[in-house]
Image 1: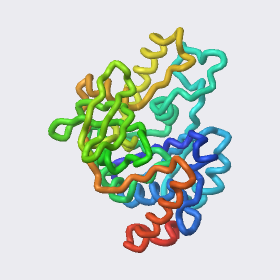
Image 2: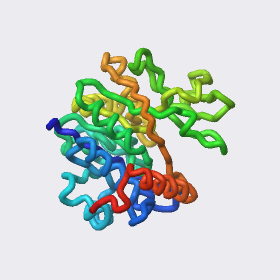
Image 3: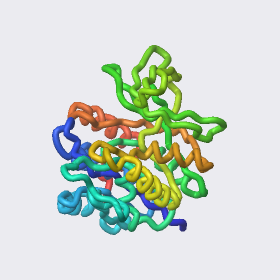
Image 4: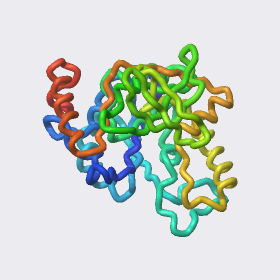
Amino acid sequence: MKDKTLVILAAGMGSRFGGLKQVYPVGPNGEFIMDYSIYSAVKYGFNKVVFVIREEHKELFEESICKRIEGKVDYAFAYQKLDDIPKGFKVPEGREKPWGTAHAIYCARKEIKGNFAVITSDDFYGDEAFKDLSDSLNGEDYSIIGYKVGDTLSENGAVKRGIVKSKNGIVTKIIESSCVLDGDQVICTPLDKKKRKFKVSRDNSCSMLMNGFTKEMLNKIESVMKSEFESHKDDLMNYEMLLPDIMDESINDGVKIHDITTNSKWIGMTYKEDAEFLKEFIEKEIKKGVYPKKLWN
C-alpha cells in the first residue's frame, strides 16, 4: 500500500473560541473534530498521522486523542518552533508570532516519507472529503479538495476564503479574499490590495486548507523560505508564509494542482456557539450511519 500521511495543523490556540478548540468535545462520547478527521482518513487509506503542535501541548494530546487512536494508526508529533528555519537565518529579536501555515508543514518534514495531505485540526471536513483526498494522493500531482464557497460563508458578515480559479479541473490561481454573500453570487475582495474586487457564483470552489501533495512540496517550501527570508530580512517581524502563496508559486513552476470539489459539508468552529451546530450535525450523520456512535471501539 502506498504511504499516505495526514498532517494535522494544530498549533493554533483558538483565541476567539476561548481556548484550545482542537480538544473541545463535539461527539456524543467526547470526541473532538480531529477524531472524526482521523477516523475517515484511516477508513480511506491513510496510514500515518502527524500532529503539528506546540511542544507544551504534547501531554494534553497524548492523554486525549492519542490514547483513543493507539493501535489504529501510526502517529507522530512535530513542533512548530519559531527557530526551526533554514540555516543561515535568525529569528528577529522580539518576534513571537508563528511564521504561518507553510512553515508549520516545514516543521513536520522529518515525519513525512511519501505523499501527504494537510488539514487543520479545528475544521470539520465531512467523511466523503477524505475519500476524495486519499484518491488524490495516488498520482504525482497536487490537489485542493474544494468546497462550494457559498456553503462556507456566514449570513452575518465577511469571512476570509481562498477562492480557486481553475480551467478543465486544473487550478490556475488561488486568490485569498474577504468574501460576503450577495444573493446568488459572492463578492470577493482580495487581501492583496493591488488586486480588484470580483464576483463568483456560490458554487465556485474555495480552499479550506485541505490539500494533497507529493514530498516535493517540502523542498519547494524550504526554497521559498530561503528566498523570502533573504528578501524580507529587514522586515521579518511581520512576515508570514502562507501555504496558498507557495501553491501559487508551484503553479508558476508548472506543477498541476487538481481542483476537486467535494460533496461533503464543511463546518468551521470559530466561536463556541458554532460547536452546538456541529454537535447536531454529527448526531444526524451518526443516525445516517456515516459514523458509529462510539467512534473508537
